Image 1 (cartoon, helix red, strand yellow):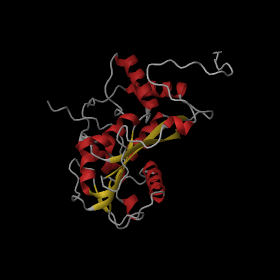
Image 2 (tube, rainbow, N blue to C red):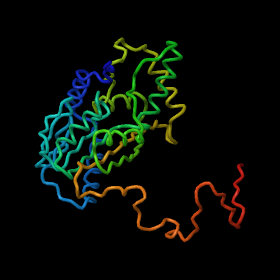
Image 3 (tube, rainbow, N blue to C red):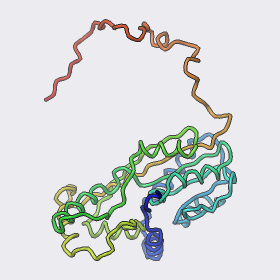
Image 4 (tube, one colour):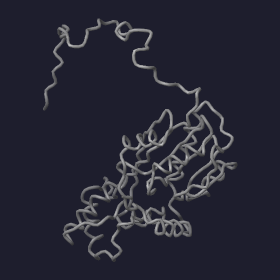
Length: 289
């Protein structure tokens, strides 16, 4: 059975188009992510001559990568097989109905030993907003409806790279906290990012008038800083993997090591099953307070 879609792609497209029509689209996180990607590329001992970028916001990438092929994050990506030595998926993968399928398409678009960097919102992103909306809605209506997209954990996202066939997979996260005057100010910024509620299972009805007032009061009570402004967490996970190539490092076969670990550590090796006498030394027991 095919699982239901996570994202209403038509609604997502409308939200993004509305954000780009705004006089002041809130793309500061996209700009931070672009700077982070550029910094990471400088640390790679390799030159890239045929990059491709998957993003709903091509404008912020054109100056940084003037020679790149830039395509939208459609379900089927407009990328040619083995046409690129670098692909960047820029803050759209969290909305993908088939994230593994997106990564597989990126791998197929890479030449052997090409690099993929995919950045997406995950982890603790908008955890505060999710919590206060759920509590407020439960108080007012006695139920819950999907209002904030679910966020994957970094340990699970790393496994997606392996499923998609990437070599040398790495997943790590960068967390940012932004301060807002109140919950309505945060909601306006999310709309200006194109990151409103585009869940396929969202409640289409107008929310109760009291919902955001109650959620705002909870937010201010539990997540305000010293100046009275509320904080919102954004966690961007970076997935890095390489298209397989024979020149890449590979793990050794079990039992093929040329040296013993015990010798390297300067210790004795004890066969499995034998007891090891305790070594003399100070008492390292820690007591709780």
